[in-house]
Image 1: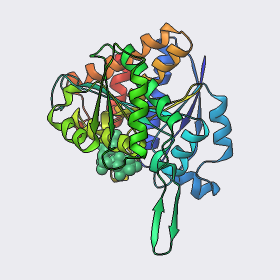
Image 2: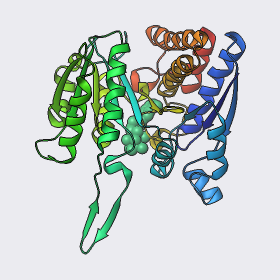
Image 3: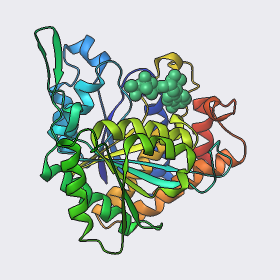
Image 4: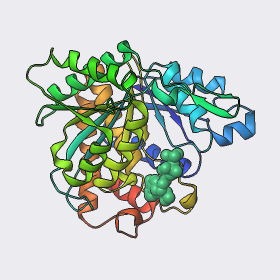
Length: 337
Ligand code: ATP
């Protein structure tokens, strides 16, 4: 039995959470993989109700669980996810982008993953006012850069792909910070002679993601660049509604969609739950590998197939060219499982 914590979030978060619970209950009942799910509050609603966007009870419950699922939160996102990433030392943000049949991808042979450093860079929030200026500190350390580079190279060796790591930075302009990141990645690359290593400036990478997305395998980059490039890579394979993410540390992991709370479509039963369900697939993979539990890996593969088999039959939400509601899409997945 796995203890799972679930932050239900804001905007479309509660709808995606209902979809996730329904799918996990089906897995529990039909596929004999047992979960104990605790729903937790964090985000804008938690702030207005309790005065805290990340209540202490939520943090305690997350720490007691085996893994956390987080639906998107609204304006207070930085006070929730950025804090959790640092508090739990979830240093690797993993964002896969893969083309699947019958999805509006740019090409049918894209299979890449962005490995984004999750604890440093401008997102650490070290900002202040100074006279008539506003200042943000961009801190990049050798230890965090080497740690994320090692994660990227390990991923490349384990993936069934071309075994290549592309280190993305802008060291021709930010010579000290990105220079250090590039040097750290280059040093780590020497321990992986079987993995091809290349470097690319971030502007060239943004262009190449459109021009030749099939050339990428594992992309390793700093926090802000990784956030922007992963929204782009998700669009290249079908949009934010299909884009999962994992925040991984040495002992704990948190899974969430790449997208935000999407207030423009909240409460309309039209959001695509696939981004969150594919994050749950990543969670099952992580739990399976951590606990040496082949059942988790098997169920994760089944969940991924259930989503893409459904899309193949034309059952799709609006964002990917269909007219099915969130609840219809979820019901079909639970039936297929
Ligand atoms: P954030 O900065 O918090 O990531 P954002 O401003 O980038 O948020 P999102 O909430 O990610 O905005 O959504 C961007 C657009 O993508 C929205 O207009 C929304 O309609 C669409 N979108 C996002 N997620 C989904 C989804 N699961 N299903 C359908 N459409 C979505």
